[in-house]
Image 1 (cartoon, rainbow, N blue to C red):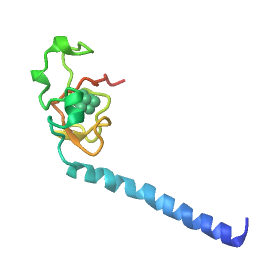
Image 2: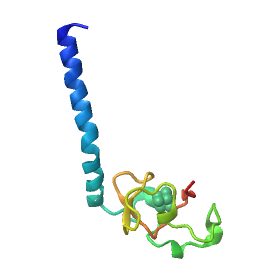
Image 3: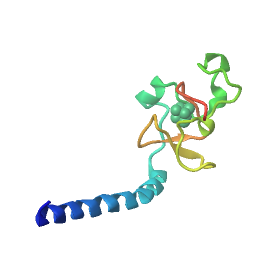
Image 4: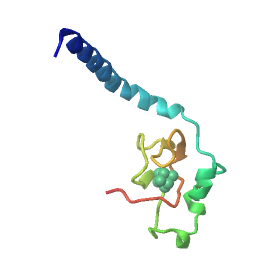
Length: 107
Ligand code: SF4
């Protein structure tokens, strides 16, 4: 590897490492994301609601007694937060008491 190529490699590695170090800050800003609207086309397509208690248990694909976003495997963010990121709706926050038809049990 030439000196120039080595220098470039080291510079790119430093930039990549800095990007990794910035990630925690990005996650903290997730709390500033907008709340998912029930009227959002993707949300309504997934039958998302802010209040899981309004969903008829018989209409659920997984007939668990109590399914909410807070106990879904796809929820992200901090336990206890009222609004949290979800893998299904990137860039938006879902209500911890909500539900959608993609609900999946935590492992
Ligand atoms: Fe809630 Fe899970 Fe649906 Fe996301 S995938 S909206 S956390 S039930």
